Image 1 (cartoon, rainbow, N blue to C red):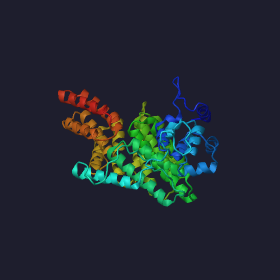
Image 2: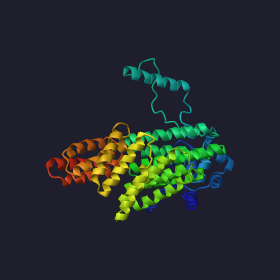
Image 3: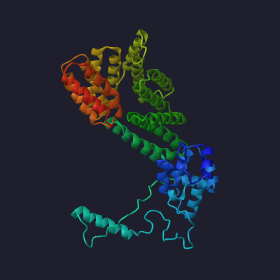
Image 4: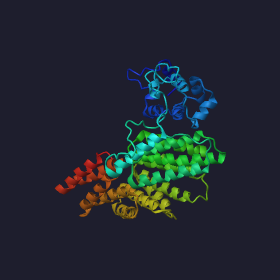
Length: 466
């Protein structure tokens, strides 16, 4: 949202956009949710993210910049008069902040006995306790129990807890690292996770508005960079292309600010892989080459660097094999990249080994070397079968099945049925849309009704929303 747009909203605070124009900023879901909860800190943060400066927010709301800063750090705004001034200054209709549009009476309550209060204000702890006891009776006996509490209808939903600390330390950085690790595990196990990943990233980014030492802030920037890379992959796996680009770009910015060469290259490697899956191998190759250049500046004793270097080489090989106008030269370059990837490479964990074999197998598959592709894909499939990383596991299963179906192997149809079933229980949109379709085409090309039925089954799963 530009400043000019905000100015127009201030002049016409109660009008919605018409004539096909975008709706006002306060009608966006995140903004409406924050306003309904009277979460002014999140409201200000959303405005800042859209380009409205802290100085401009202060000018509009009649607050000092220090007040705005305190609110961004988590201070709650409870005074009705201040809330009204904020609503009017930002051009927000008062009802969105649960404010009535007429003037309150002298007793601090609005006509009709409606008092502007925080959720649950006016309800005693005793009332809430009795409500919980009554619910306990329902849980235990299936009905309210006389004398055991009292059910209260229409309890309002309390505001979300969004207060930020006044200062963050390395414990907060470790928390972000743990959240990132858990998200990575979910993405590898089930695929997808885009919506929850985005919510996590938006919350985590707010920590950047909090005071911290230089050491803590640099560490936080690095962890946030890695988080946004994983969020980008989750969005990509859900088919949310624009969102995935946003988060991978954010990751690159954060890694640059942190001076973290490894995480910058890590983001570029993932960007390259996403572009390959979107059939953009030329741009993918450029991203990987930039990642390899960035790795040259990473700490030489970092044990993660050799693993990422090998991954960049194998993804480069895959991109070269996928070029629309592949030549003998580019095919030769792909083989060179594969040799570099495997030279003295030691897998750090099973997932890395499985992915290395998977990308190697896919490269040979596109190069037309089916026997070599089958060997690598079989190893990858076995590796993932022994772990919980089913997202890449189903891709390995589909790719291996594709080789068997294309070569007319007798086991191909049984493998296809198993692979299609495995994909259907993941949350990966790309495993369905990008990988099942080639298998469906190969099955359709085989003679026999069984192959045709499996082709229809594959297409049905491919078009079913995860």
